[in-house]
Length: 173
Length: 442
Image (cartoon, rainbow over all chains, first blue to last red; front, side):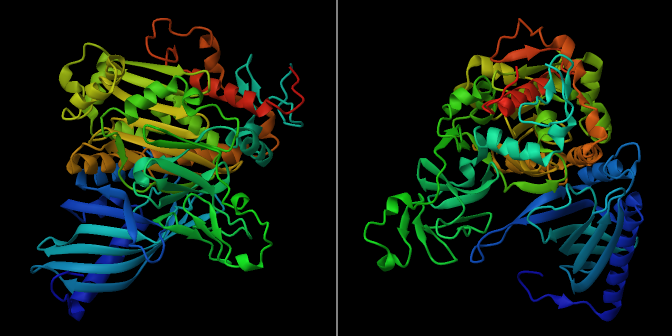
């Protein structure tokens, strides 16, 4: 993942630690514990979700963001969907199940920094609708571990979609 | 004539002008959708994209003109062609990507090859064709009219289409103010966000032409959490001046200003670095229209909308929105964010981020709109509901009292929290839907 030097895969203890973190963090989102999830972000979090424009195979992939938040705008997004009086998209809430897999983890640029890649599959069932949404993507995270635990400093979710099939996205991945 | 809640013949009108009602069938029926394609989308000027999406010769994007797939291609420095994306031989798509660059269009099915202006170069089997085969009639089907309005590319399938400027009428003055306000013009900052929504396309057009009534309820989230709270508090305290503008052609917009007398620091408007350029490019009236404008949201009939808004923490963002019908109950939405070409990259990045934070495929405004538009479409798509038309009744008391002091183009109406612009859009829609059906019953 690092561009200049060959990334060094984490040892098994760190791998399990990162995997547990990613599972727990996804469970918080499935339980709609959004404020607890937000507490896992660093104060300088950059949270991005991208889709792609279909280009001829010989062209460079053209990805672009549909969500690109810093701590302040991510907090606004979360405050909206976590307050029943402030959201229609998530009231009644979408029923979700996030599957996290294909975890790869490497040591980052300094001690306590990790680069983690994972796959996410988000199953989303909107109450009252017979249809379900599926969002699949690869995630690239920069995780930081210090005395207070592990936090996410950067997340990029690259969705495997050109057109969102199930209307606008009000969930986090 | 009497109002028929259900459409039984082409001659039925959907809009009851006297009572301020519109048949729900207009918002769910696939039969109405088919008629709309024929009578509205294949006759009107339709927005397809922006010059800056296809800057170089051979650049193309794939869009829809009506419900026909088309290639919008830069075939010469100052020329754009709109070509049906279907081979004249056996119909396959020439371009199966969303965008790209090509020297020619070669059909992947059997190899017919076309120039980028659509002319047929070879079938690959020309030696088997009769000598009198006329290649000049075998090019890609080309939209007869393509015109450019300050970078905005429109096309029409109608041979007899009015010139674009006449079609735009008075809304052109406002579009020019937003899209031609610097010498360099505006620039698309990223490919369009795209999403499918199970809602009728007209809900989008109506929402943007002037649905001020939905904001406090639909958007209670972002308006409560808005980081530009100090500005909102300012206009809550001092009031705001908001009004609709409609044009004869069915276009319109809603302009919202902070009330006069507010402390200048509360006006968070356009970039100071760019404002002098506005004065170079626009008339004095246009500059004063933009001055202290908080939000402008509008619709170019039938399905292009635009918004320049100043919500959230960031820069003011200008957005174009296309409500592409898919059926009576579904649309695909395309959404682009724009900034002035002359702006620095940091400013453009902030405009883009702020723009789609609010309005886009995951926009904090949009997500609540879509949830409610889908619910309206789903709940109206049954014969019981369709006996009860939608209400636009708050348009009625104001229909005949335009603001006589309005000094800019178009007909202005106050107050803005009425349905006057939306109902006008539906009346123009209804007139086109009933035109030329051979059995008008008026």
